[in-house]
Amino acid sequence: MALLALIILVCLLVLAGRSILAAARLLWGRALPRRRMNVLIGLLVVGVSLGLYLSVGCVWSSEHLRVFGFPLPWGAWQRSSGGQWFDYVSPWSILFPPINFVLWVGAAVAPITIGEWRRKRGPDLLKRTVHGEEAPKEDGPRGDNEQGGAG
Image (cartoon, rainbow, N blue to C red; front, side):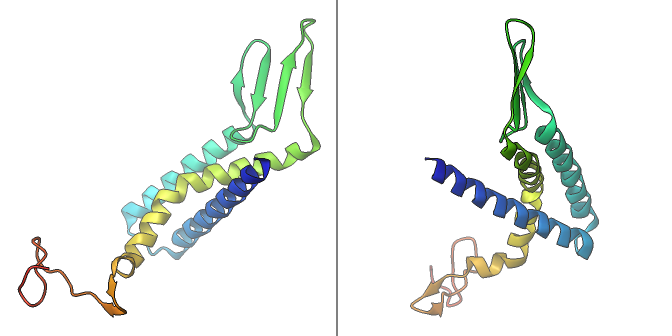
C-alpha cells in the first residue's frame, strides 16, 4: 500500500512539475491573449498563496493538536495533560513543504495549461482513422459527410 501511495505521489509531482513548466513557457513566451495571460497570472498568484500557506502553515488546530502542511503533513504538535507541547517531526519532514508547494502551484495552473494544450493540439487529438486512413470530415450538425449522405 505504501508503494502505491509513493507511485501516485511521484506521478502527481511529475504532472504538477510539467504543468508549472508549461505555465512558465506560456508566461515568458507571451503568446497568450491578454485575457488568458491575466487568468494565468491570477492562477499563479492563487497557487503560490495556497502553496505557501498549506506547505508551512497550520492547517488544522485544536486544543490538544496542531498539524502543519497539507496534503503531506510535515509536523504535528500535541499538548500533553501537563500543558507541554510535544512535536512529531522526522528528518524526512524537510522534504514535505517543497513537495506540497509544487503540488499546490501545479494544481492551480493546471486548468489553463491543459486548456492551452488542448487548444493547440485539439484538431490532432480528435482525428479518427479508419483502417489507417483518415475518416471523412463531418460538415453539418446532422453528420453529413462530403458526399452529401448521412455519415
